[in-house]
Length: 92
Image (cartoon, rainbow, N blue to C red; front, side, top):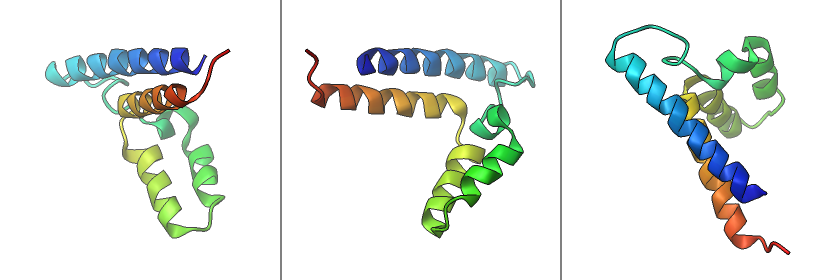
């Protein structure tokens, strides 16, 4: 199951990355170009998530992850993490 999630996440990341690249190449301003997690969940929820943790290092990391990291990079990273986890889990 985790292997499938990893593969689906990688495929979605490649799909979103492809359309982001095409939009940047054609210089068309649409929602693919600036898509981040904060634009998907909203500014209020993003601030609430970051404000829950009092550790500055974690807040700075979450701030980068939510506001600056392109969404396709997030999907590719999650896909790789799922695939690495699936290597160590036994399936019966």
